[in-house]
Amino acid sequence: MKPTVIVEKLEIQKRLLIKQMVKSIQYLSLDKDFKKANAVMIKPNLTYPVYKRGVTTRKDFIECLVGALREINSTTKIFIGEGEGGYNSFSMSVAMADMGYFDLEKMYPNLKILNFSEMPTKEVSLETMNGNYMLRLPRIYFDDIDFAITCPLPKVHCMTRITLSFKNQWGCIPDTMRLKNHFQFDNIISKISELLKFRWAFLDGRYGLDRNGPMVGDPVEVNWFVASNSLGAFDRILSGMMGFDYKKIGHLKIAAQYGLVPDLEDIEIVGNPDELKHKFKLKRNFWNFPALAAFKSRQLTHLFYFSKWSKLLHDIMYTFRERPIT
Image 1 (cartoon, rainbow, N blue to C red):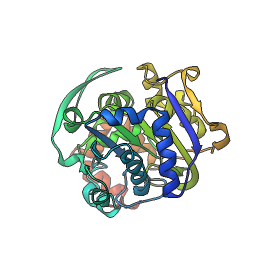
Image 2 (cartoon, rainbow, N blue to C red; image 1 turned 90 degrees about the vertical axis):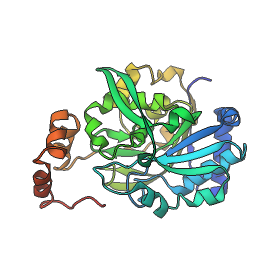
Image 3 (cartoon, rainbow, N blue to C red; image 1 turned 180 degrees about the vertical axis):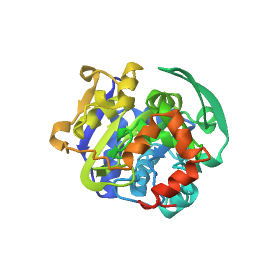
């Protein structure tokens, strides 16, 4: 099937959203693959310890996606997973419990919630623009998963400018200090998505995050429903809906060089993205710039986070700004 992106106004009521998802699942032929699969993974974006509008994927959205898949069968195993990160900032298991994700295990058969940071890993070699890069990823993707579905939100991001379907897989890296890989982010994120078999994307577009992100900023209600069988097509169309040129987004530009972002004329668009456009703007604050410098530099990352000077540097910084939530 050719790369296809479905763009509609989001249904708010659960019953109607499930119907909207079922229709999209059938149109994208996801139902055929789900019937044959032994196990699939759903990856929400849970980059904050509590639910926050425009920041974290709503449990209700994932519940509706699971409900739509369960209309196909109750035998295919469904995993819902996320990893810890952010400088050892919080427990993902506690966060998923607080947001109600573990309730889904009681509601649906053959469903399990996972914290990637508490699971076995496998070392892999990623072929990137800068040569091979070694990384440890959750073994379950290689041993048990037939394919994966990513469920991001439309957000601006102070380091990567926007975070959509490719960026969401950064949470698949189980290392609680995964920031040590930031300097390679543009080169590896789409490769990670491809290796971990992420073939579909469903946007939780009730709210987006404007001005700054991925955790602070201005939540905006956009009510977008976007689904696709191609992460590259998904990010290309959505970045345009947000007012960004995907060619100016580092990781999407490189994903296109890997052949993972289709040409516009090769994408089937169901719906009218222009009718739903909402212009997002990234406005970095003062503290974003030293963090951005470290994000792009292996040496500065070591200085700020792993050297003997890191605690002193952070103590100085937090005399001027609030410490992140833990």
